[in-house]
Length: 222
Image (cartoon, rainbow, N blue to C red; front, side, top):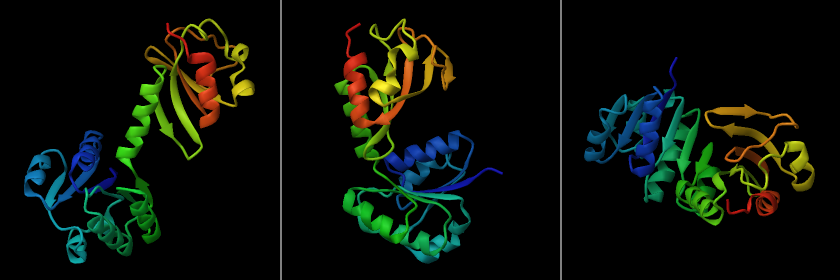
């Protein structure tokens, strides 16, 4: 069976989530207090309704507790975001993801029972900063305060060398999880795998170790 999702709040973030879930063939209920936004997503979501998600009876009438996952993407109104999340928790929704505006907002959401809290603007800012600082960093995913996964573009300093020859794990404490080459991806590559110019290395490690690795082996101009 297809999973059922509800997205509350159809601003840029909520609208993007709604669009992506619908594109993947999921059943999506889109909820917003703005009729114009609802009209915009009426042909994208499975169902789109004008409703106030801070009202307990409204959520009950929508059968919100039967959804597999509810995403609270309410924009700048922190009070509405917290109230809605609290209602969802009290109604026993299985999985609740909420967009936070700041660290204080996140603390409150965690305390009242949100299962996952995201900071899309902050996280995107971090990813862009990594891309701007190093031309070899193609993408960046923060796993925790100290660990990340990055995509690094192989340049001249690593091209023509094997993984064991570079000795990345021993020297830099990082692991190469996969290598993307053209349209192919090699998961858990062997130690004798030779790297080619333009390969994309998917590397996991502590941020400090990844930085050392970047500076030592990927800071070239070719």
